[in-house]
Length: 113
Length: 114
Image (cartoon, rainbow over the protein chains, first blue to last red):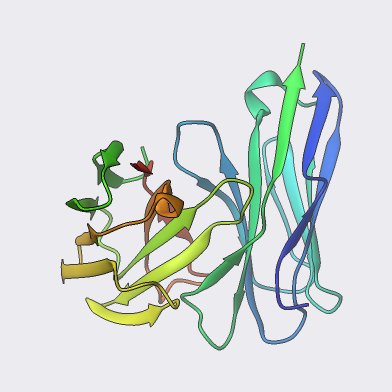
């Protein structure tokens, strides 16, 4: 694959649920994998930038893993809160053009009380 | 607040108008980007400027004309646009030498072409 795919497209969970999303990307010429959080009417905000196979990163209740050999990354949210409601984007950078990112269509998360 | 500002936030224009979008970054970065976000589509990279030089033009029609007068400012000049150009236009900046090249985005300009 030469594009970035995210699943599911959308997700609706209740407060306190834990959830995860998937990002698939080309496994060749890997440079970096980015996760962004995009709330409505705001700017996309970087959550994680991962460059090494096996990387695991964590920020509060959110964590991400990376497998560059098979071309996937998971984003986990533990104990979802309403403020986690947003679209989560992943983006892949390759070694040929490090400044160029290819984005997925995102996973839209809605957390309700 | 990401350190990247965009003006205007909303723009409505006719197909014969000429307008410009402005982006400014206050982060000291050396690269700036224009992206287009259409409904149900991923963010599409339009242009990349590294050290004020255009390094990427992602097959964008000539009715979109970028300008980068210095490393802090980026413009997108628009003329004779089509209704299908209506979209959210996002600007971003990054420090290309930094590991992974994290990008910082502005809030976007919502463009409607009538």
